[in-house]
Image 1 (cartoon, rainbow, N blue to C red):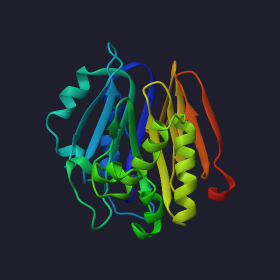
Image 2 (spheres, helix red, strand yellow):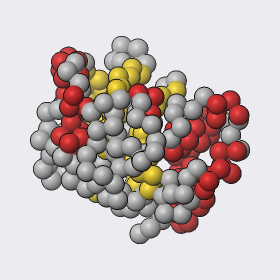
Image 3 (cartoon, one colour):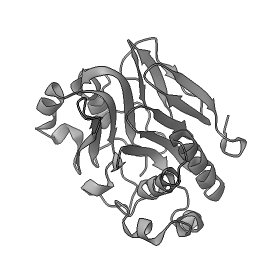
Image 4 (cartoon, helix red, strand yellow):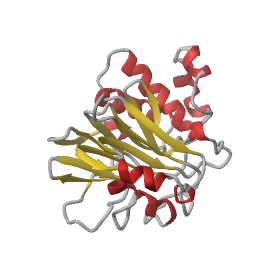
Length: 255
């Protein structure tokens, strides 16, 4: 995956439209008029997806397609009536040569975990063949799609299944991939519905605390002065009431 846009939200339930469509620089707006396509294309037209956690059951629900977000006639109405307090959404600009299919679109999902990646693994697949080879064969055979993002998710997920906490799984995966594939842009975003973890490495990420919650996005959704850039080379860990930003391991920091 090249340069995509993603966002995460934890807080009081809001309509999905409040994140996807209503703000002046909403995710829908970013799909066709992004502000910062660093090292990538011009638009994010190669698929989209949104995961929200049902307020009654806490279970994640996913809606995704392999076409531009602006071309989906059903999503605006759905987003207007679905309310959720935990959301992860993304629009995709595919790396040249990688498939434009629904399974390749984020968020990727496994159990209660949802995942997105904005960036690219430099020199892949050769650069990360060693990391991929350490995964269980079944994980490789069941990748969502033959993309660098799906491999990153498999690496994170393997750590989660081994009992690591979400923040540790994301940070360690970023460290491993940055060491194996120098120059990669590794902006990962993951949630279990109660915690959001995001890395900023090679691309922008901003965060804003809302009334009773937290919102983070590749690009600010509006001109609210409360948006704060996450420094490059840092990891953000947030719950509904807390935001912690700390440096990634020294070997992957760029600032």
